[in-house]
Image: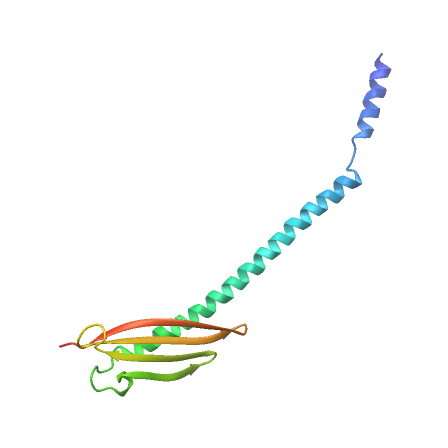
Length: 136
């Protein structure tokens, strides 16, 4: 009886050693799908960062122009006359701004700053609206 149990244990042990070829192929397939998903996610994240960078640069260019216009004299500065001013070029970005006096309230001007640029061949645009008032 003991010898039968030993034979059964030896036979059982030899049947369960290692992986089969199918298990290894399935494991490699699952690993490959996971790696491809991670690479795809990284590429999408890099593209999103690139778009965000271009939008941030456009917004910074518009904000810097508003900061230049803020301290100018309301009545006497040529950069604050009614109408469209520009274009101002900064690398890939082109800025224009439009000044309209007394549109919203008396003694105020509406300054609409527009930045245009190309991103991967597609035109992009950003507007920043600023209200400047005359201190009475």
